[in-house]
Structure formats: C-alpha cells, structure tokens
Length: 427
Image (cartoon, rainbow, N blue to C red; front, side, top):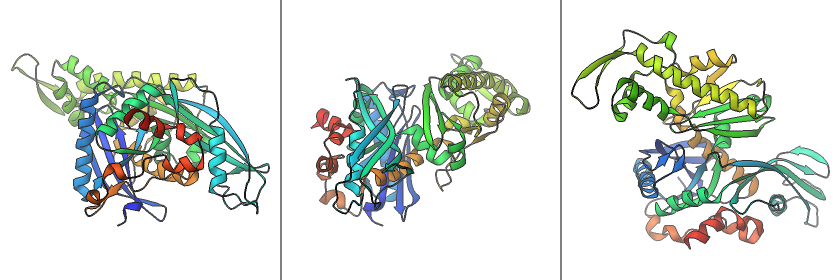
C-alpha cells in the first residue's frame, strides 16, 4: 500500500462526524477505514462550539486511524449549507505550446481565467466545476488534454460560500491537527454516489435528510442545476417524540432508532416498548403505531417543504424522480411515505462499499470519488493524506506541502482560494 494512493474525507454532520479512508487503484476506489463520532458542537448544520467540534473531529479521526494503522494528516472536507451559491462562469485562453497541443497548464489557465469575476467581499470561491471544454468551437469536451487547438474555452459553475463559515470550518480542522487538501460541495459529492448517469441527465432530485437539516439538490443534463437547504431533519422528529412521549431527548433518539416507523399504514400495533416518563420513575408502554403517528406527521412536513423548494427552484416535473439519502432515510417507512406523497418513483441510495453500506455515509464516500475525479481534471494535488509505518515521525504534518502550493506556480488566481484563506488565518 502506498500513501500516494490514499484519500481521506471528512463529513462534519450535525449529529455525527464521519471520516472515511479510501484507497485509489487504477481509477477504482476501495474503502479501507471508517471512523465516526458524535458531533457535539453543531446545530442545524452550523458550528456553534469550536472546541466541541474539534474534539468530535479528533475522536472520529482516531477511530479511523486505529482501524487501518495509519496517521491521517490531510483531509478533503465536505461543505454544505444555505450560504452556498452557484453561478455560471466562462474562461477563454489561447493554447501556448508550439505544436498547439493542449496540456495541463492550458487547462489550469482557462479554469483560473473563469474565476476572474466580481464577488462580494464576504464571500469566497471554493471551487470551479467545469461543465464542458470547447476547443476551436468544438464543444461538450470533458477533458481537452492531448487535443490540438488554438483556442480553449471552459464553461462551468463557480461555487462560493460565506467566508465566516468557511473560516470556522478551517479553524476546526486546523485545531484538530489536520490539513485541508481540498474542499468539496457535499450535494455534488453525494450525487456522484447516489445518482446514475441517466438520472443526472434526465433531471432528478437528490434529497439528503440529515439530523439538523435537509439538502435538496436538482441535477439536470449531467450537472448540478440548483441546491438548497431546509432547516428540518431527524432532530425535529426526535424532539417531537420527546415532547409527545414526555421522555428525555436521549431516550427519544434511541426509541426512534430502535422502534421508529415513518409510514403509519404499515406500522405494527403489536410492537411495544417501555419508556421512563421524564421527571419521575414511572414507566409507560407505547406501541409502534403511536410512534408512527408522530413520526409521519413531521416527516410529511419535511417532504412538503422539499416539494415546495423544488418548485421554487423552477422545476415542475422531474423525469428522473426522487432519490433519498442521509441518515434519517434509513428509518423504515420513509421510502413508502415519500412514494405516497410525491406521486413519482422514489428510491433510497446507499453506497455500495463494504463497511459503509448505510445512507449516512453517502456524502463521505461521494467526497472521495468527486475529489479524486475533480483533482484529475483541474490538476490539484491531494496526496499524501496519511503516513504509513512511522512516516509521521519522519515527516511531521506541518512539513507536508500546504494545499494550493502547486497552484502558486501555475496561476495567481488559485492562490486566492481557500488555501490562502487558511494561511491568512493560521500562518
């Protein structure tokens, strides 16, 4: 095993921090390590306590390190939230080589040129996603390297986010003794795992229902068309159960995980459980049907908001249907309720890798896949992410090349990205 073939993703969720270690061999990804930890410093997808978030990240990283016997020192971080904005961009350059063959430097220059746009001072460009390259008028090219041409164009999407929120994420990662090798937009990353190529082309909605919030993303013509965040998720269901059953939040979460059912018509009245009423030692017995009555009402509200949000994005019909993912969709009955409400074909997406075959890991696995593919197109450097067999002692974390250093030689614009912001705050 070579550390130049290993990537690590960091998914900072409201309820759980997830670290996934992937080994890339011949363009194929294998998951070799997973670490999870309770996320104590997050609320509705935002950091509210840096110290607790840092502690949670360290716990998840240490668990993943123990599983594979490696020391993690660079991660690809997933970012999400209502502060994310997408806007189209276009870059044009002349091919510089004497034989007019397009090389890595030409691709880097055209991507850099597309970023020369005016953005508000409180926002930061975190990535540019090429939709297509155009060589002398020939369009729909995915990778122009090796082609002969005079004029190279790139049409894509610029992703910007709040500098404040990005700064807080970078600060948490830095204080956890990690470096950021890249930043990925989570809806884009999740789409690479959850959606088929046909679903991306036809027009599909990817619905990621997490603990604190729900991300709604619409893919069309093989690209992310729009994304939005709803501040409702699995935590709202837990609170409803806590109030309705008059039990503690911790017990409500366990009851939800063990006995929860989201579709009232299929719930079992014979499935019973005992709870302790809060403020007393008194025990009460409830059945799954009573539980489903409360869960279905809240999840139906979430689905209604999702449908409304998709229509606000301007999509009245989605031929590719709806794809559910995220930890909350693992609850029995959530798929059946969605099928009943959306009047369309709906399925639940789960990563097809041993050890991460749960909907909650979709984003984490997607970050690995998307980061690797995007790095190849843009010429980014993501390795080494881990140290093997004592290499950590020989090459301390701080000695590894900072993210973005390669771009220093290739183009000025890349230096204004998250790498410079990282160095601005912490060097």
